[in-house]
Each structure stands twice: as C-alpha cells, then as structure tokens.
Length: 250
Image 1 (cartoon, rainbow, N blue to C red):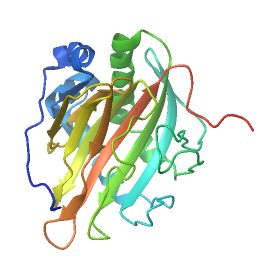
Image 2 (image 1 turned 90 degrees about the vertical axis):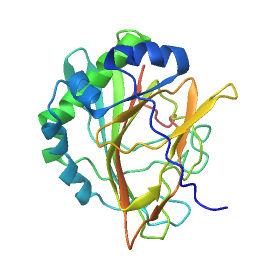
Image 3 (image 1 turned 30 degrees about the horizontal axis):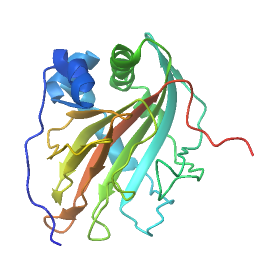
Image 4 (image 1 turned 120 degrees about the vertical axis):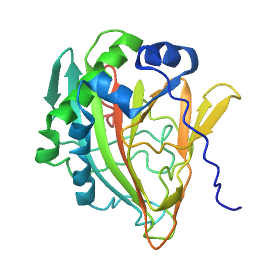
C-alpha cells in the first residue's frame, strides 16, 4: 500500500471555541496565532524553543528496532498559576493504552534546563492547565511533556508505532514544531466509541491538536523523506487528574 499524499487542511477553530469544540467532538485544532493568545506569548518566544529539538537523544526503547525517534521528557504538577517541576521520573503506560511499549519503565533523558527555563515553556504548560480545568473542573494537573523528533534515518519514520491509541490521561496536546523535507505524517482522530473520524495534516509551526483522551483515539501516519533526509518535530503534553500513570507497587 502506497503512502498517502493527501493533505487535508486542519479544522482550526477560534480560541474562544476551543473548549466548546472539545466538549462537542472530543478534539480541537488551534492555529499558532490562537496558541500565542492562549499562552500569552509572542510567536518569536515559541520559535526560540525550536533549536532545542536539534539536541534530542535517541529513543532506546523502540521495540520495532527502529532508530527514527529521538526524545526528551519532563514531568510537572500544574495548579492555578504555578508550575511545579517534579523530580525526573520514568515514563510508564499500561499495556491497555500502549500495546507496544506499555508495562515498561522508560527512562528518557530529561528536557534540558535551558529549555524548561524559557518563559514560553512555562506559559504553554500554564495555558494547558487552565484549558483542562475549564474542560474537566479546576484541580491540580499531573503533566508530562515530551519533545519528539521523528526522522527518516530508516527510510521511514513512525510517529505512532503503537498505532491508533489513547494515552490514559485527560487531555493531550500535540504541537507541531517543525516539518522538514517530508511527506506523510497525517493526523487521524477517531471517536473511541463510534465510527466518526477526521484526517488532516498539521503543517503550521506551533499549531496544536487538542484531544479529550477519554473520548477519542489518535495516530499519525508514517513519514518518508522528500529528498535525502527529513524530520517531523512535535511537543506532546499530557494532563491527567489524580496523579501520574505509574506502575503499581509489586
């Protein structure tokens, strides 16, 4: 089966419509302009984060043997107008949410202090906390942030090697940071309990896909290089009530 080359436009909504749209259909897409308004930062500040994606170590946990994913990870508790950094911890998901990489402690390299210290980073986390509280009620949010680079080192790169999935959280935000020299990487969102779905390609730097993870499943199609080499950079932030997903004590 050949790669899909379709490129449907993302169904962006106005910032004021983000929560109603999430409530109605379980997902919403915001343009970079709306993301800047939501986080109260200029686009130049968000673009200032981009160089840190060129310093991501390889993901050593890929069970398909691939070398196409690089990443860093950090954890926070976001409450009202405060972001509390949590000591570095393993990323863990149960098998029911990640059939490929669930049930294992994955110790990724931490987000660099210089990245996390930039005000735009904190502002994004605070904005997502506010949005999640609007959607699900005001409470502390247990937040994980993942910097991803999917590249074409192996000829093909897989943004979601586990396939269409849920993350086991309340809200997922997938920010497109950069697309360089690739085709593919189409986003697909489906109702968890129904037939409806939508597909589109995120292309604008710092546009975001917001997902009510209790209601929809999502995936991104593989990427291939247009020339010799290419990559797709994303920032994925998950928010969960009640605590982090952690392995039950043995």
